Amino acid sequence: MTPREIALSQLRGKKTERKAVFNPVSSVTVDQMEIMGSYFPQAHTDAKKMYDLARAGYEVLGYDALMPFFSVVIESYAIGCKVDWGSIDKMPTITGKLWKGYDDIAFDRHFLDNHAVKALLKCISMLKDKYPDILIAGKVFGPWTLSYHFFGVEDFLIKTITNPQEVKDILEKLSEIPLLFAEEQVKAGADVITVADHATRDLCSPESYRDFLIPIHTHLAKNIKAPAILHICGNTSDRIEYICRTNMDGFHFESKVDACKAVELAKKRIVLIGNINNPSTLLFGSPQDVAEKVRYAMDCGVDIIGPECAVPLRTPLENLKMVARAAKS
Figure 1 (tube, rainbow, N blue to C red):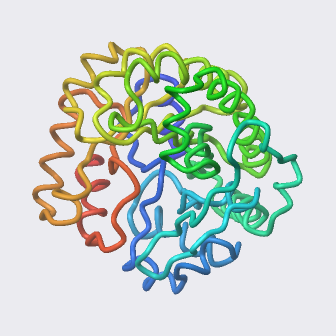
Figure 2: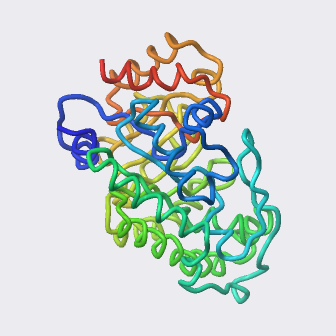
């Protein structure tokens, strides 16, 4: 089986000869930039530089998937948010709000004509042509995260208390953005779509996830025309039950949820991905530490092994490579 076949089979709950290894979000580091000769911030908006850097996921790290969407800002930028594109060792960030309330929301599918969006779509097509046997992972951001960008984190979260109906209307309207963007990525050649939505415990209670996001994530899972992987940062043990009700194909989760606990909570209702700790293991640990964490996640029954989230840009190369070596051995 090819790496693509192994990864897709596991996302469909089928047994394979070995575990798949990949990160549904960014695994790019400064070391990889130097090896591939492609650097931030240009690699966020230039298709060729994006392509060269994304190739490192397979060529350097030995993972089963390529993920060319490195930041959190492309669709928000395309719709009008101001962005600081960062530097070689700094990720881009949103620098200002765009709207105050539901009535201010204004966008149409022409955001897909933005140069950064078109660069990503072209890069996906280039990767698909060059690496037909490697999984190509696209990515979109869910409407909870987009609301942080467009309304500001504090102002949006206040609305969840003062005007929950407006929040529901905002989330329903903004869900059009990931659906449109996902559709174009699948057309360009993406095999799977990561839906990253930062509904972390400190910003979204389990009750808020239940009331606001189960319907939205279910809608996205139903309408994205490829296997969909939900990513949520932080300790999500209090919402895995709800996540399993969304019909997402996979859940990419952090090490703040113990691997065995996550498997117990999921009860084989969703494919579990990730769990290898970023700050203490991948960034500051040794390759042996990484191998031990990989073995633990595999022994617990995590389906697809990889870093828990976008990796720190100074993560040692050998630690990232050890994720694949340990899982495949």
